Length: 395
Image 1 (cartoon, helix red, strand yellow):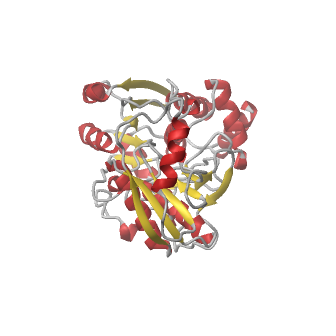
Image 2 (cartoon, rainbow, N blue to C red):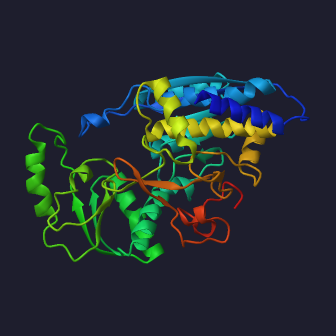
Image 3 (cartoon, rainbow, N blue to C red):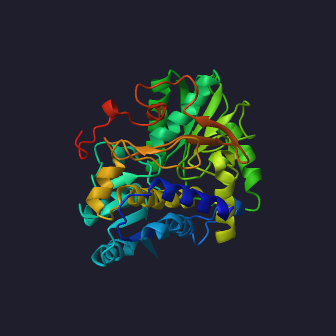
């Protein structure tokens, strides 16, 4: 499978024959904030220590496959810190000369770090999904690899409407991130002609989510919590906190498909995705990390591949020039998703298909057939240009 990457590199070099060779040294960093976590609901969800970092190592290998032929070199530093040490550690990276930084952090921390970085540093957001970050709270120095809540909600809504399941019961959590995700689903329903017939809140009481007898308790709680709901086709779970949604399937009072934070989930990538050449990506990642890929790994890999592709095509490591090229119509990069991915020039969001994952396979991919757009079907997912209040990108 490594031969596949070498063949791609040779093909790239053939395309670049005759182009002037420019030596470029890229010093990038991956910065991860490690937040306190509750025990995972399942042992399958234990967070690996190299989360995101393994994707960075693989991306560096991939970038060097082509870069070594062109005189380009790539150096990566990885940093993980608790929230209280984030600002100081991030400032140290900037002061050390890292001008491209992939950030794995929550919305509020990403926003603050973007402001600390200033215009001379390019931030690539690998995890924060808040719609506001692509809207009124956008920052010109921040490009978003991770899809927004709105993109993921739209992906679910398109599939539900395509299946002719327009009536939804939405169950959302009580934490701020849950409420923001619920708002994304309200917007998606209105956008695509679905109807949320009823909403219910599952309150986070701070108790343990995982106990030896947890399933017994849930078998009693969930049916009661969903009893007597208005008639609906599907249940949409808005549980960004991962507190209750995994328990919804098979525990509802009235049987119905579950989508959103459980059941059929919208994801950027997952470990069983094999279409469009993804098998070779999966194999190389597993050989490197000794585990399956997670979304954070893929997003970090893609962030650094975006940089590698831009350096190759634009023959520069200068941050302002890279940013300009990334936002131009000339940029695209392969992402094992069937189509090249590109950036929205009005808010810095990476356009990309969203996989609908049922826990074992890709059940579908959005945008769905029939959802058209004057520029790109990918722009049917998330904030379109007229909908975004972002002005930092010159819109």
